[in-house]
Length: 278
Image (cartoon, rainbow, N blue to C red; front, side, top):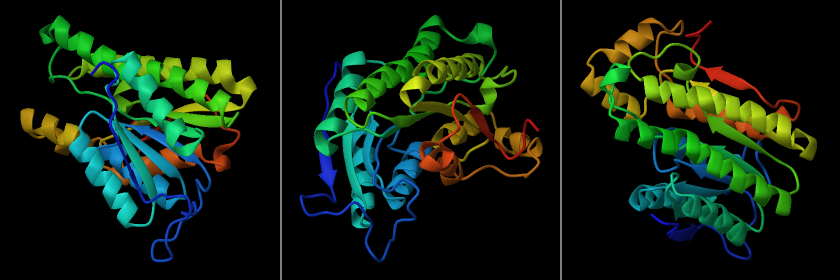
């Protein structure tokens, strides 16, 4: 996408306070913060965008599909929140930098970021995945968070001076993942990148954590279940809570880690998995 960025602002003008309407009151977890969210057009990212706005944040949604971004942005605005969106290709450095820069341009700063965007792979053994498919998974799932964190840290330094970042890993990056080996490998690498960033930027009061979702009812999971029928039932059978998560349940964990209530938490990978790896 070569850095192309398109944007739309909903629910904000010079007189708009940083709170939700009386009919949709903020819970306050992220009051006063500006949040940048990748992969925000659907699934966990879209749930996070809605939740963060309800919690009092001004949100900048980023993803590749403008139609999805526009729908979520307008939904947030209709509920009394403040939202903007940019079209962003996570595998393209210029596009990622432009998206983060747009957040600062619109809202004046960056406080917190949720790097949730990712791509899937065709389920199957490692030797059946093409090199091109492996390169694509790597470019989006590992290089993407690396590019995003670099841009986000620069923006936080230049504006808010302190902040927090959460990366979306996966429970599949904490154990063997024979059906999604490249996906699991990139997510395990995100865990290492998260720990390194936490150690590097902690002295600047920038916290970096990750969440590792378990079975979550996203489009990605449903696509896997269609290609490998019974996948969801099998995963649920391995989960003590006996069910898959709603995307908002994952977003709730990210919201807490980004909030000041998690002010002494950094460098952790938090499983949000219904007890699967207990």
